Image 1 (cartoon, helix red, strand yellow):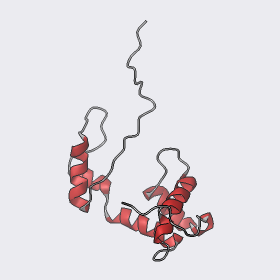
Image 2 (cartoon, helix red, strand yellow):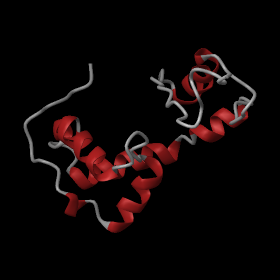
Image 3 (cartoon, one colour):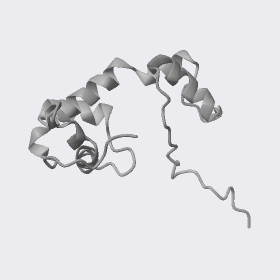
Image 4 (cartoon, one colour):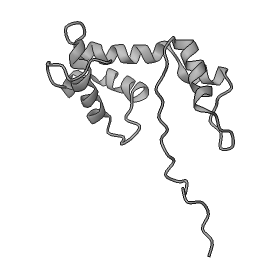
Amino acid sequence: TKPSNCNGSQYDDRKVYPDLRSDLKRSWPDVESGNDTKFWEGEWNKHGTCSEQTLNQFQYFERSHDMWMSKNITEVLQNASIVPSARQRWKYSDIVAPIKTATGRTPLLRCKPDPTQNKSGPKTQ
């Protein structure tokens, strides 16, 4: 249902000015590969171009950062007693519920595996 792949100007990294770049590194980093610039380029080219009649590239990324600032999801989760823990585990619905209450939207969450954890369990000889 999200608009995507619209005709429009392609990503221009020069339009992500240093202050905005610093903000986006906090609010919208590439958590998978760590290549923020390539990630932002993909987001703009796929979705941002669809907003171009209303928001130019700078405004699109500025708006995304402002949205992140308006809802502190870490705080929302902390208030629901959901905090990082090596021992505690939560169900997907436990995490989604307080976010949905705070934002009025149902988030789509993905887990990123911890590469330091051995999936096969301890090895015995």
